[in-house]
Each structure stands twice: as structure tokens, then as C-alpha cells.
Length: 284
Image (cartoon, rainbow, N blue to C red; front, side, top):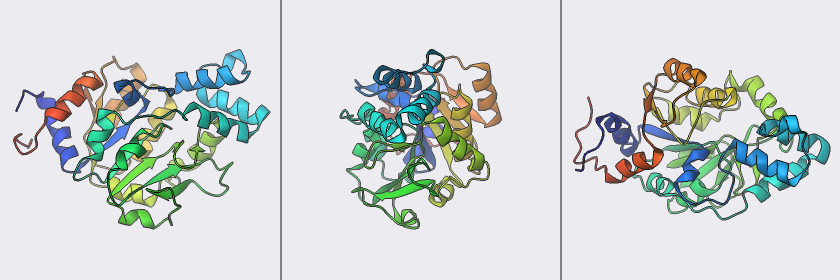
């Protein structure tokens, strides 16, 4: 087997065996040419380009979205979000690799694009759970959806081989989006007691570890979602983070026992493609 950094052996073996849950951020879209916003700043810029937003809110995605919702109506915000992610988004090599794993109990994807959905189309017996805005779905925190987009009962995900969890929603198949300040206020009011986290997610994270790919933890919102989604899972976790962490990020990594993998995501994916779990010695 080609040389692979020993630090990668534990997460790579865990992925192959279904013991490590990939947690995808918008940075994974940088692995291939992309026509949709690949991050909060880019999406805030898209909203700002389509409607007048006060200067002090520019670059602040939840604030921009809230302004559109307040002064243009929620339906306008939803339409703009659909427009932002309407371009065809081909799955990256990482999406296809994860979708091709024999054991893939859950993928967490905290961005609004359709790439993971399209990659999983090659699998059988899978579905997704999308976070929703309570402005659009009063009394609901999430929607369970079969692979074909049909609505599933809340207990059906327990029978799926693979669960795609999109806590912020997604453009596909319904166009559900948790994106504005008011959306997050609703979620954060309850997230510490785990009410917005689906039972199927809680069950699948138990005894497993997380691998963060294409993620940063430099906003409080990013850190809260990551912390609450991996609550009651098993340590350690890993994060591919080539950039030097901020002070808040470093504190978060230490608190959550997340080991930093200091390499570009493209290099990590190259190692992933070269990894053969049958040839590699599993770490103790």
C-alpha cells in the first residue's frame, strides 16, 4: 500500500467499518468546480446581490436572511435560497467515495447543496432527514424523506441502511432551509436538550466517532451544531483542518477531543482513495 500518514489510519479504518461518521461542511465543494455558494460568506453575498440589505448585515448570513424574511416575506427568502442552489451540483470524489462505502450508517451534511443526495442515489434503502424552518413547518423540527423524495413517517429512518442528515435543510427535494436569525433562535432554544435532533441521529451516533471534512468552527453557530450533533458519541473525533485554527477553534477542538489533521482536504481524499483496509494494519 502507498505510504499513508499514520495519523490517518484510525479515521480511515473507522470510515471503512462504519464506526466513523463523516460530517461535511461547505468546504467539500471546493474539491471540484462549483456553481453554488460554497460557504456562508458566499451565500450572504448572493442574497445581497439579489435584494437590498443594510451594509452592516453584509457578510452575516443569518442577518441577511432575516432582513429578507422581515421586509420581503419568507417566501421570497425561500425562493432566493432555491435560486442560489438551483445549479446542478455534481458529487465530488469525496461524496462518491462515501456513498460507495459498504457500511455507511450516516452522513451529516451541514450545507444546502444537493451533492450528497445525488451521490447516494446509487445506494439502495437510504433516506434523509432535513432540518426545517418552523416558519414553514409550524411545530416541526425536521422532515423525514425517502430517497425518491416522498415523505416518510418519523419512525421509518430506523430501517434505512444509510441516513443522510441535513440539519440546516437542503434544496433537494423540497427546498427546506433553516437560515435566518429567527430560525436559529428557535433551534438554539431547544438544542441543548436535544429536541431538534432526530431520534435516528441520536441512535446512529452512539458508540461512533465523527470526522469533520470541509468544516470550520470559527462561529459560535458552527460550534454549537457540531457539539450538539456529536453529543453522547464516542471520542476521539478528527477534523481535516489545514488552516491555522483561531483561538476559539482551538479551544473547541480541545474541549471536544477532536484531533486536528493538518493537511489540505484534497490530500486527505487522495489518501482515502489509496487506502485499502484489508492491507492496512488496524490501529490498536
